[in-house]
Amino acid sequence: MHDDFDSIRILEEIMLKLRGLALERAVPVSDIVHEALGEYLLTRTNDVNLFDVIHSIENAMNRADQFMTSFDPEGLAIFIKSPIRYIYRPELKYEIRVVRDNKVSIGTLGVVLRSHDMDTIKHFSGFINLWIELERKYLLRNRAEQITYVTDTGYFCRQIYYPETAEQRDGQSIGDAISRYIYVFDELLKQYFNHRSGGYGIEKLYLSRLKDGKLTI
Image 1 (cartoon, rainbow, N blue to C red):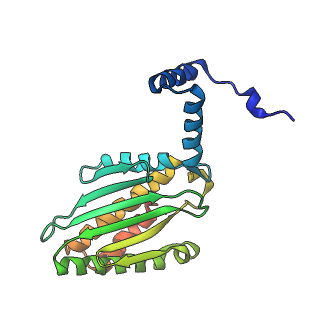
Image 2: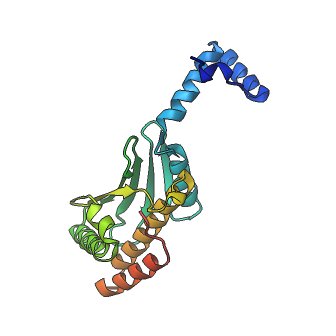
Image 3: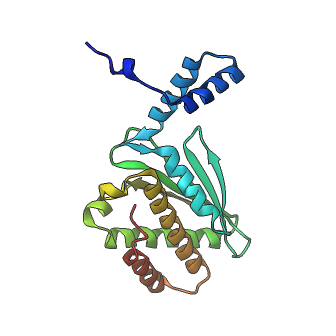
């Protein structure tokens, strides 16, 4: 039986880089190739490169002045800090983790609020309850029923799902969709905290962003 691997051809410029890395690390070229292939396969699921998802989020967040990011390549995660101009200056952090081998969910989005002020924590809880209510009310029924939430004091976590359409399932598109979701969540949370909009005002903003296609995960 013919083995397709026997017919593999590597471009000369790539081979030169492989040899350079092998020489630098004092290992055989085959070790470098096996490592690269292993990383490629382990960071792909449903034909999506998970590193592309993370890097897309990182780039999108870094384009906005209000966010600070840090990247954990081994844990396939990115952490995003967003300042809140509010009493006692609470710390708000978003944590996105992508996972392998799940055909429906690509990972989770966690939001952590750190504050010693009980009123601030209550405001956060009030917003989270409203956000979940809006998602269950306005998202497509099959998507809304599918979402898994975890909430606690100062904590919100939600599963992130693949886009409905196949053409949006590359790493860049998924990362962009997650970034847009975070932008909207962050915008509406700060509106809620600043008392510029009550529950009804937040609902109107949510519907506006939903109509604009910014809430697709």
